[in-house]
Length: 193
Image 1 (cartoon, rainbow, N blue to C red):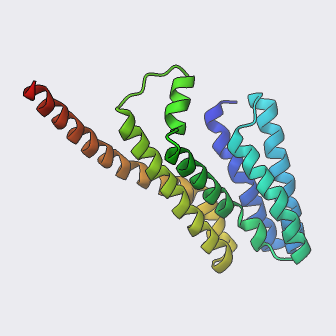
Image 2: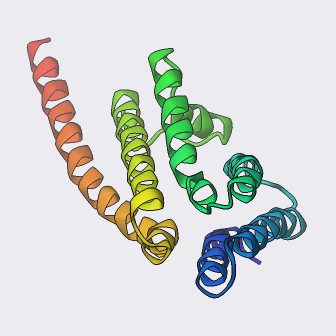
């Protein structure tokens, strides 16, 4: 199994939860979602020999929110997992950027990859990603509380990738503009000396 197929596995807990909530009690839906989250981690470990940090974070959040949902007999807590993940990841990225540590640049250097553009542009991209994750997290919180489970499941799965695709296309235009400005400044600076 290829690592890029991992995103297909990540859909399963949300889709199973949606199906079970539609056809069973909230308790059964939550237990099914928790069970599939455990299986997702096991599959990742078996097939990829590694569990990604984001998978671990999501798993811990589901393990905390699942029992709260069971005690309260309300599935909204289970559905708030993307809200908490978005808030946490966004805060983590912004905190590190404010300290002068770019996660993206660190990862590229760790993988011994050449940084494809000036570091300040990479940092801007990371800031934009942090705000995207924050906005998406808040949006998912809204969906969990005020919208149907079907709507929530759509944006938890394929809808997220569609929205992220729109973000990436917009980010390409921003990068081009920043890079063009950088190159013009670099050319003007070279002419002065």
